[in-house]
Image (cartoon, rainbow, N blue to C red; front, side, top):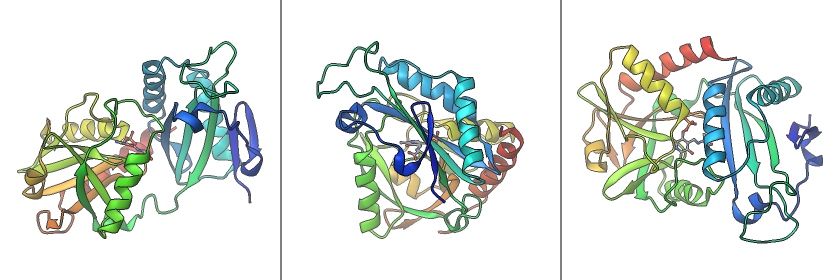
Length: 287
Ligand code: PDD
């Protein structure tokens, strides 16, 4: 069955959804995106993603073409039309196709934005072997631009990072700048030491993860201590546990960094417990 996707107001079979070669998303990576998890056919943290989308658009002087209510209707329509149970919905908004290549932003009055949404099924969302066994990461220099708080579609360096990890026989890479970990290529990074959860503080250096916000809230509610500050790879290698969070991986333990086993080299107690709480709470609040 062909997937039904959304493009600029229409629901179309994926093969019929076409955009211009002049689209600024294609030519200049001039676009933003969101990935919302779908759990048991429902949207996880929808409000959080809509708020971050509005912020990303605003930071790039892009208009917000759809209201929260309209976005919810589209998300639900796609879920229904594609019978999506577990996975995610990808949304991308670009500055549109002005009909030529120009560095200067086009006039939004004459160049409407391009809006694309599609579903991505992931039957292993809950029973991901990586969550069970943990993942191995390498560290690499963070060579992305300076506004990582904006969720733009310029993902070449994160892709290169994942390829470097793959070449090293690992699952992912943690990015290091000025001696400290910023985040993972497509997730936020954490360590646990003496029961305390440590993760980098929010700034323009990292994406303000929606999963991060929820997990830290649940951790604090469960009386776990949380410290938001930068940490080094050496500190991470000497930690009791490490883990990542994202809309696609939820909470996933990290068991090795640059070849050094973390703790026992197996997932500890904190990350699996946080994953359990996160899934339980998300199931309750998903819409
Ligand atoms: N990535 N940091 C980066 C650089 C990310 O790309 C992501 C998400 C996160 C976690 O954010 P959230 O918890 O809101 O998913 C942190 C998405 C999942 C992706 O690009 O597929």
